[in-house]
Image 1 (cartoon, rainbow, N blue to C red):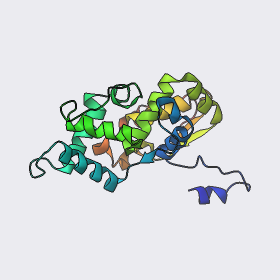
Image 2: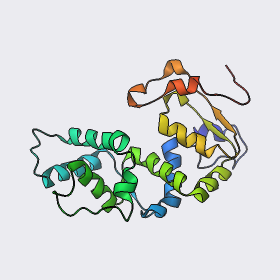
Image 3: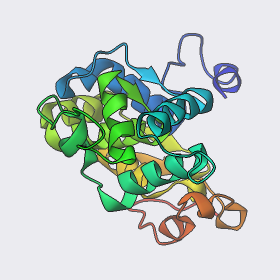
Image 4: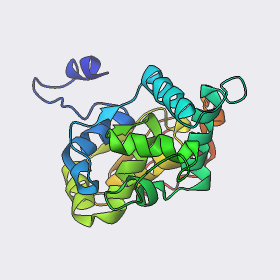
Length: 210
């Protein structure tokens, strides 16, 4: 995409903000994650890393992996962060959050999150969750990024979930120059939380191009 844009505009008029929503959020975190006690050199866990961590947690809790698999634990962690404890950053991530001592203190899910915090590791969903937390907690950070982005365009918006929409709405709230592109008939990620109906119901203040 960056290469295609560079062919349409004058030399030097492309920048690092030609990226995914997650890519943008990583840029925010590299600058501002220190506000919640993480270094800017934090690690993003890939699938292999996350499976290794889940395996270590199962072994630490003495769980029989024929009864509770790595996939089970990772699914429980995702559900815990999304539904059971959406304020998990406050409760488990921040420097003043309760510290893990032994397996009697935490469940396997809590142990998993504790080790993420201990090793400054983020999972894919954490990237956006951390940015939303920082935007809602530190208004000066929120305003810095709002002022930095004069115009925002988001493509394939039919595949954005609630958190993606929250990021879009926050960063466009200062200049109100948000341009979105999508096709609800091509929505393929509803099983992953995408909300094409939000696109259909979006209220545009200016122009709609069909």
